[in-house]
Image 1: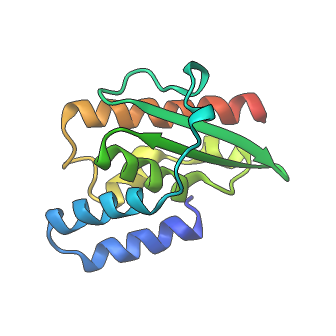
Image 2: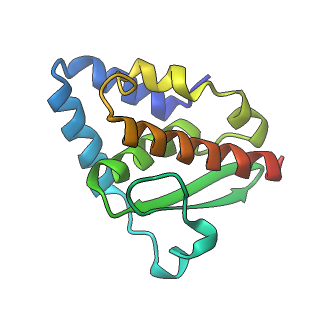
Length: 136
């Protein structure tokens, strides 16, 4: 159960045959995100378990979860952008119903990320799920 924005991303990835092209696309997505204000880069928004610095800031609006984030690593910023497409606009209940590993698998991310990046991605997904669970 993915958002329409994520479904569009899946379609984009289907046109990118080489993993290097997909990797570049993820990085470009991260570069296109608005910067997370420094005031939100605080210990409360920092995600533990990532090799790089990662901050996720979530807000509920009209019963829907929306989050922004930032990282000091380009690929991780791109992964944040991917997660935003997967989760933003969902209710807390819908966030909890998403099988993030399966959805990331549709993009081919599971087999192409290093162990450290995979652990960081899991930590980010867990933070989103925790936020949804508290909000629901």
